[in-house]
Image (tube, rainbow, N blue to C red; front, side):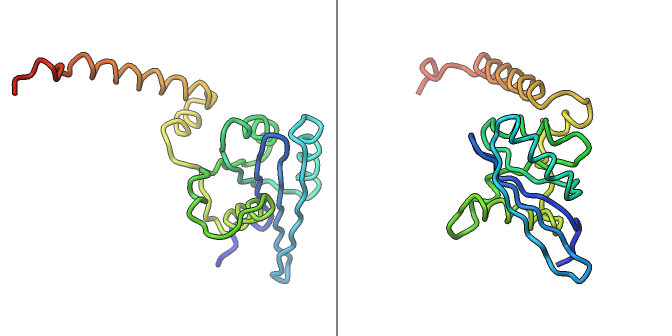
Length: 163
């Protein structure tokens, strides 16, 4: 497959740790792997940022599971392209899953250009209007709740229907 990003990183984010795998394509076509585990505390995330900067990595793919990705995303997005990947896409992949394999798999997919930002209204609003994903999520949730309430008002009660 064609290599799109010669230096990229895959991150597997958890509550207490972040596993990072950097794939670097050398001039002879050989792939060099660097895998390290960092703490999710500020010092650990700053060490991760420094490590990525020392290896000149500017493209990162990370899973958007739960809410643990947020501090990592906000710390690493400055000067880098951080792509949030939907974790549901990986569930269909057979085999035993470990943190190191997950981060390496994300980096490999990103390396070949097979990972794109999830297309959703939240992301489009975030990109086009420069508002935070949290604000977009709250706004969409309120619109969804309002439409559900309107549907309930217009829907006739089933108990009063003849038959």
